[in-house]
Image (cartoon, rainbow, N blue to C red; front, side, top):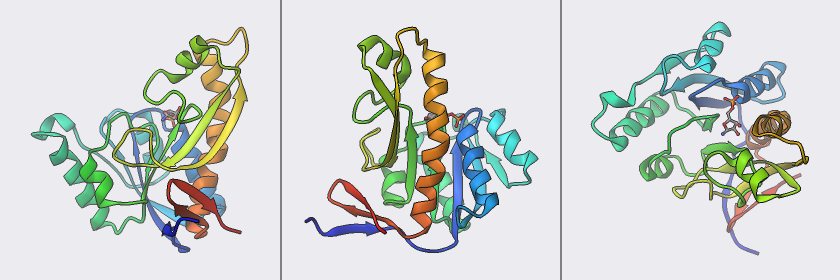
Length: 212
Ligand code: GRF
């Protein structure tokens, strides 16, 4: 068997959430933090969009928030360097992408190896990228679902942590399939973060093992 490349730390973690939109996955994770299911605290909720509903929801829950307009930075690496600085200043253990609609730069990925996770609303490696629910319907797959994964420089190609599947029904629309998938997202994303800070995720080669 491949040698272990990484084992997640067992600790009370410090989380930074990056989001661009409604933030329902962030809220599901924060709910699990509040019940104590996840041994961590959300130290910062960050957005590239000042008017993201998820950011307002974070403020309403009393969490620290920040937004930075990418247009005020000369290029993508400069923008991501600012995020890296904010994360380091707060001693962040895990960066959670939750509907963050920007592709993170390789420099960002390298700064936090196995410390950035994402959720994707399809069963990777099928349907990476955008508009994946409609693409799943158009392709005619009978099953789709969602995937949590570590973030690597190649988009949607990092090691898979958890997946959940849902049926694709004949009369599905993009919205009806997205809603069915979202129910599962709200289960596997908090579970991914819970396992992470229980020190139970071990990466060997491409594979993630869940330790007992
Ligand atoms: C989810 O479908 C997630 O899989 C994708 O973006 C959407 C974000 O939804 N990456 P929300 O903002 O968490 O409600």
